[in-house]
Image 1 (cartoon, rainbow, N blue to C red):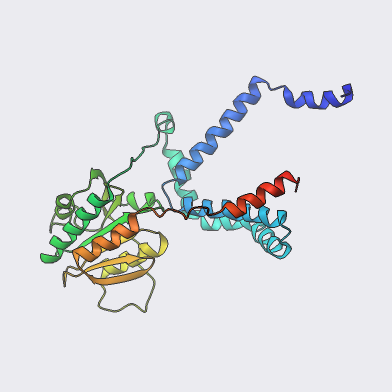
Image 2 (image 1 turned 180 degrees about the horizontal axis):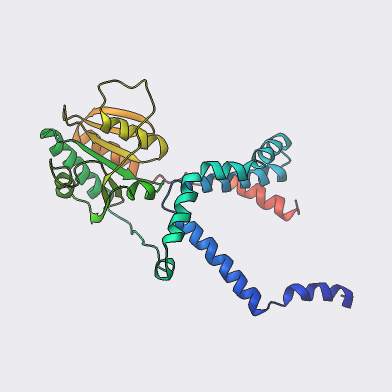
Length: 286
């Protein structure tokens, strides 16, 4: 290797302490940005964008010209789309940064360990059954993949281990927290008395009240499961993906929730073909 070839490389090998500080600051900003969106619906949108970028690169490697053309032209409007889609989240992030001080900036994120799904389902089903018998209205939102930090902020933060007694006490008539929805994350009651967006679907039955419309509304924008107990009839319903299943019993509700909350494992060998193709393409220098 000649001296003329070594000199350009030496510019990249040398890293000053200023460069190190610069890299650390950028890494910290990226980390905090991820932390700020981790508890919102924006997290799922970011994952979708990453998948879109990956498919764009794969379509180029495999010479899928039509798909590649569509994806690249779609992504050319990505910046404008991000600003429009993330407008509420961007405003919330800027407000949070403005309210932050040094202690909150460096505060580590809370972690939620694994939990016993059977106990959680039993607590919810038991509470729903008892509330149904007494015709006590209830609205329980069970968070899944999509985080609901912006909804939690509208209510009263609790962070208590779930039990049927806690849920029944929250919705007891005239209690301070009985209005609004309970937000659950794994085996914790994160917040109570939260406000939910109402559905815009005008084709729904006029028999459905505000609770049912709120349950459908939040299930349209997140992958949560929402348990509703009617105050007028005492009937138990479950909202998922904008659809409402009514007239459930505590047993049938428990079966639904067990199926929804149990992690689904991918079949053995899933994705191996794509990974093999990418590896072969990489080895060929494609």
